[in-house]
Length: 201
Image 1: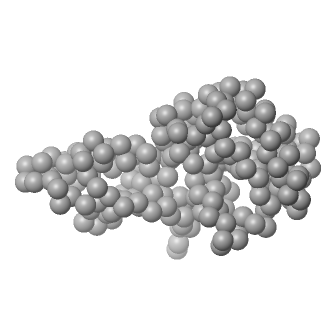
Image 2: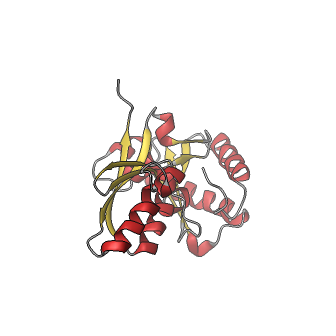
Image 3: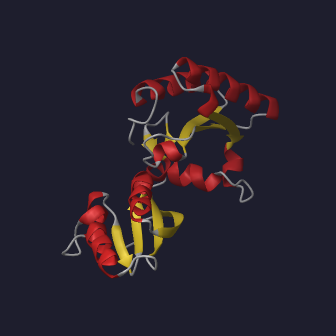
């Protein structure tokens, strides 16, 4: 995970999370997710989720508030800090809209690994590009920048992505914002989807 966009060192943040878990038995894990783990240089906010074991509503509120205080002590800006808590069993509730983001983007601060790795999977962002606004020479230049003159380079290679078909690109979740910035630079519209997968046979 890239840590240059955090107000503190990742190791220090992980150490704080591990200590918090050790002193609070209801804490199962603490997850960092959102724009800060998708490669955004200056995140709009920092999203944390405390995953708890059968905690009552007041416990969830108190634990989230207490951990937020620890983050403020580490230098996180108050106005950009979003700390929530949910019970483990609610993580897989289809009505809980944050669940896909936590599983696909999330980084476990107590285990030091992305959630998708802990689930033996991979997380990606799928981009479907609309190049209709690019004309002739501009479209050719964009294509070279996208995948190189030989079709095996460009930004796709730089970000360890894959060109799946005509104007469909898959990039690792941690490179999603860098690829978005590339598309914005070229003025290319797109639709994006977060994906989780397990490598098949």
